Amino acid sequence: MHIRLPVFLMSSLLCSSVVADPCEYERFESVRRDLASIASIELNALAGELYIQSHSADELAIRGRICADSEKYLKDIRLEVELSDQRLVVTVIMPPSNTFWDPDYAYMDLEVELPAEMPIHIKDSSGDIILRGISAASINDGSGKIKGVDLKSSTRIEDSSGDIVIRGLDGSISVTDSSGDVDLANVTGDVDIIADGSGEIEISRTGGYVKIGRDGSGGIDIDYTGGDVTIDSDGSGNIQISHVEGHVHIGTDGSGSIDISDVTGDFRVDAKGSGDIRTKRIQGNIFTPR
Image (cartoon, rainbow, N blue to C red; front, side, top):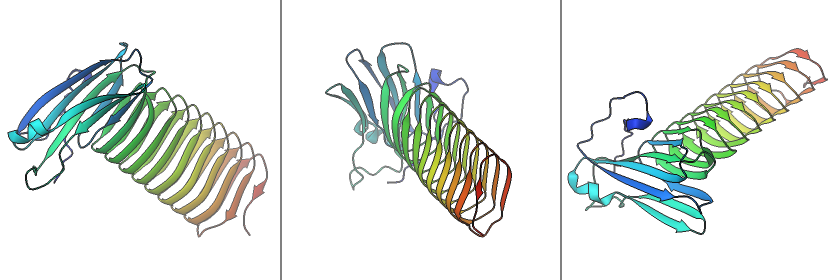
């Protein structure tokens, strides 16, 4: 089944209008649940855009827009809500593609509102994700851009493809990413990039340490960190690091230049690649291969 990535008008939740992709047939489905006895929410989405923001009410409010190329497929896509202990599980249900259910396109766009402090675990297959002012405890995403603004808790992101952009996070963040740029700014805690396949990495203004485990290709730009910076392994691309309140340690570097400046601690490179190493204003000791 061919799944398209539509641009959805987010009704009253978005201030500006966008032009939606063609949607020949559509219907809407809404869910409201009181959260007085709920400890966390799990949202299992499929294809479609996903927009989640906080509100002051102690309830979960979801509006789904179901779109397909034929009216007969609309009834087969729905939202299912289940309660498991103190976790509310919301799942988009769509039949598997076969000879009887085989639309050219079918998806559900979701608008979600919930209290800012309510932890939510997000699973999504394709389509952009926009998060504003919420506690996104974890995000597992297939494809599409992830953008988070003013997030209220630590989070874990596992992403296959698409850019990841975070602007403000009260806590720490860990990221495992296959492809796409990773752009993180104003994180109060630690940043842990466990593995990154390809794409640029930009990290700015963190309250804690920054650690990159394994990076394949793409430049790395890190500045204004409140702790150590560690890069275990870098494949290709330039590395620029500045304004570090701690030590800088690079394990193995493949290709690309290394520029380090304004570090309060030591700077160390274990295995140098093919590029030059340049340093400025390192207050501690410098250890580089001969």
